[in-house]
Image (cartoon, rainbow over all chains, first blue to last red; front, side, top):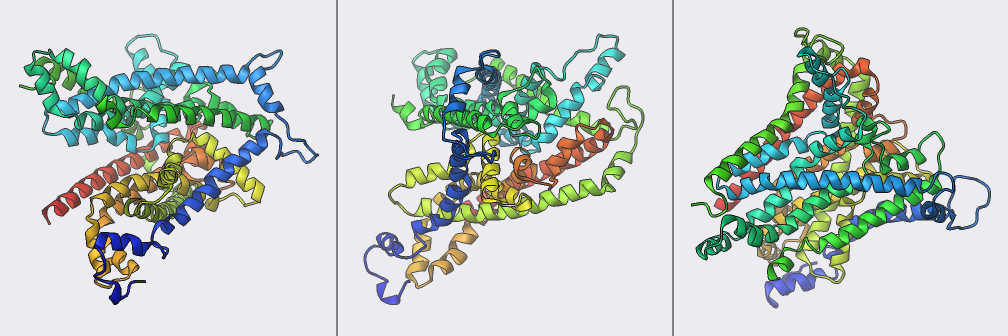
Length: 305
Length: 269
């Protein structure tokens, strides 16, 4: 603890750091949060791994540790083929479509906010983001109501004499709702990267005779790449493991990998071993992707290229 | 002259922005309209004005219990997340130490885990140690996923504060706890409130993890999810949706305005 005699020795900054070491108020502060994440985050993932190897099982009889479930996952079923890998691939494609479309839509929105010189920039940004901060489930609900076979859209169409559309319980419905849900959020990291762009670079380009398009492709776009990568990652990861939206508006057509994981842990025919393999595979892909893309997230690296 | 946008391009982008805003708010407006519609089904043409659905959900005990359960879980878990977030952020901002990189990566990693994976992981953990599923287990899970959000709010704030203020108090003989209470806490209070609100709304709305570890507990999202399968409850659910969305929009805007007012005051002082 601090005593009067220590005061005045050394520069204040050094002293604060050196004195902090022995007591629990320094890095020791991290003890509880780190312990919490180890016990309730890392250990549970370890338990999933144990289930995937049959080291733990819901079946009471003795069970040797085996890679069988992993082998089955990659080799596929002799009759049904690679059901899980095919489903994973379908989910990857759906997530890629959603993420790419949203980033393409969010970019001009962020560009307008950051670079048009509008005075109400932050008001407009809040207007854009606010829906994202309201309930996720309720926004999905809104679309479930809207797209119903006798919902507002279809009853409106038939009231003006048009054929009703089959919207709900399709893959399209899942893509539309996921896009709707995530669009505001993606604009945010892109806005931040455009906002920190040094305008003098654009002025210099203009002075040197570059057109606005040239300046955009040579300066603005490369410098905002970290924001684009972050935005992409923010949508792609949650949508890849999504199960709520497909289960509410997707039907069988929109069934995704996440739904399969839920079903394997469900009440019907639970298969925790296979479910654990699926969950870990998803986690592995997402982890790898995060590591690769986070290289793009370092703004300094891009700037010094 | 704007070097980034020609006048016609700016006009084009403004129109596009307006269209997207309409797209974002239109479903909410449609919900609002049908919450006052005197019909069991949300179809055009409208059947007349009623407050029946609002009255029905206000007198529905199951729904009220679900709201209360979610509020309780959100209050507890965001308190836990904010306390852990303050501890972690203080340590990471104020001290340089070996391994701070991996530690902050661990603390932020719940941001990128698919919730379905985390949900089943927790389920298997509680199954293995025999912990009874209920409010407690949902709170545990929600603390893990909201902790990174609190850190993302608190860390930038702590970095803005001049560390020499804390050192001065410390040098004048204040204990560490006293320094925190009289210097640091008041300065980061707006960020703490903001972090608490973010954690609260995230927990209140969280379905994926809760669906695995809730046991028999019915949270508000769990109630909604189940109600979506029974069309007879739809008008009532629409009325609730309107209220919840309206409240959260007001909270969001109030939090943002409050944060900016607090920030401006700090700049002035």
